[in-house]
Image (cartoon, rainbow, N blue to C red; front, top):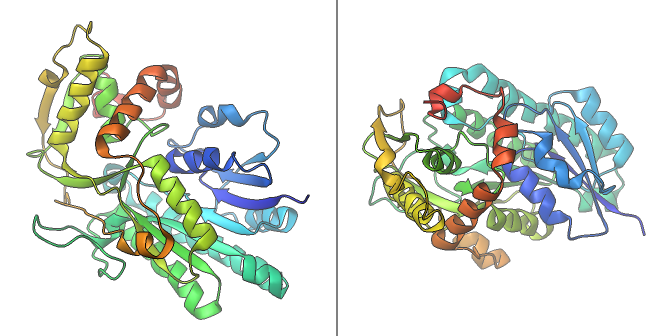
Length: 355
C-alpha cells in the first residue's frame, strides 16, 4: 500500500514534535519533517523517531524555495502542516526582524511553493490537498476581564511584534485561498503546555527553577490571564481539522481553562510539593518573585472553541489539573532532555535558571 505523506514544518519544536508523535499511530502515514533547528527545535526531541522509517527529517528553512520545491516534487505530500515560527514574545521585543523573516516572509515563500505544487496536481490531487497553518490567539489582542472570549470573527489587533508577524502570516494564508483557491486552513490556539516545551516558557521554567530552589519570576502583578491548552489535546484538534475541516475556514482551539499567571505558578508549586515531599525547597512557592512587566503585556486571552466543537466534534480531554500533573511528571522524568536542549541555546541568566 502506498503511504500518505504529510510535510510538517517546524516538527522539531514543541507542538510540531507532539503532532508527529501523535501521527505515529498511523502505520500508513509518512512524515517529512522540515525544521531549521533554531533554539526551540532540537534533534534530541526527535530521538525516539531515529529508527522509524516513516519519519524523514530534513534540516532547512521554510523560506528556502528551492529546498521546499524539491521536497514537494520528491515526496508528493497530500498536505502541508506549518508549525514553523518564531514564537516567544520576549524574543520578538528584543529582535523583531527575526519574526518578520520567519513568520511573514517564510510563510509567504512556503505558500508560493505550495501553490506551485498544488497547481501541478491533477484534479483528484488538488481536491485532496490541504495547507494547514498553525497560529495563535495573540493575533486578536487583549481582553478585559469581562469581554467575551475570542471567536473566529474577532478582529485582529496584535500588540507585540510576535503577534503582528503571526497576524500577517494568517492574512497571507487566507488570501491564498481567496485569490488562488489553494485549500488552506488556519487554527488559532490558546497557550499550550505539556511535554517537550522549550524551558523559557512559563510552565517548564517554573518547574525547573522550583526544583532547584531558584527564583520563580512573575511579570507585573501576576494577574494576567491565559487560556491553557494541553498540547496533546491541541494536536488531536489539528489532526481533526486537517482531515475534516472545510478549506478556507479558521478554527479556534482552546483549553477552556482561563487562569491567572500567579494561580498557575502556585498550582505548579503545590503539585511539586506533593511529588517531591523530601525537597529542600518546600514550600516551592516561597521562591516566587515579582519582576517588571514586559512592554505591552496583554492582560487576558480566552478562546471560544464552539465552532470546532459544533462542526467537528472536538473538545479537550484534559482539564487544567490533570494536564498540569502530567506535565510536571514529564519534566521531572526528563531533566536530561531539558539540559540538552538548553545547552548554549539562550541566556540562562536572564531567565533565572542560573541565578
